[in-house]
Length: 129
Image (cartoon, rainbow, N blue to C red; front, side):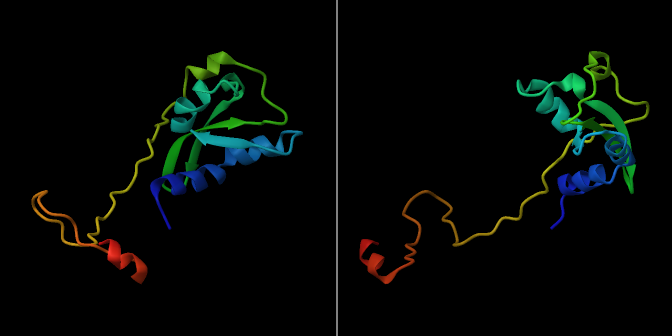
């Protein structure tokens, strides 16, 4: 299974800034989120403090982006000025969904006249069709 969002997640987890933040923290947990998730969820969630997140430039394999790092059990001091600026040269990818393939279970009529064919999962339901 592969998709752009899954690849981005693993690239963020492999980021050196995340590993360095965890190694330099007395805490046991480090969290990294994408810029999209930070902008769309973290900034607007009443249960989080966006000012305790720090932007970090992430360059892993073919991915170059900005991740936002938080240390939940030993948070950074709130700094609202960091919410305005991203590191120089960083881009913000927007996750996208791959196109789905469409499968037809039965040939659909070209008009709405008539009803679709009756499919019965159990013999006892055949009388209802």
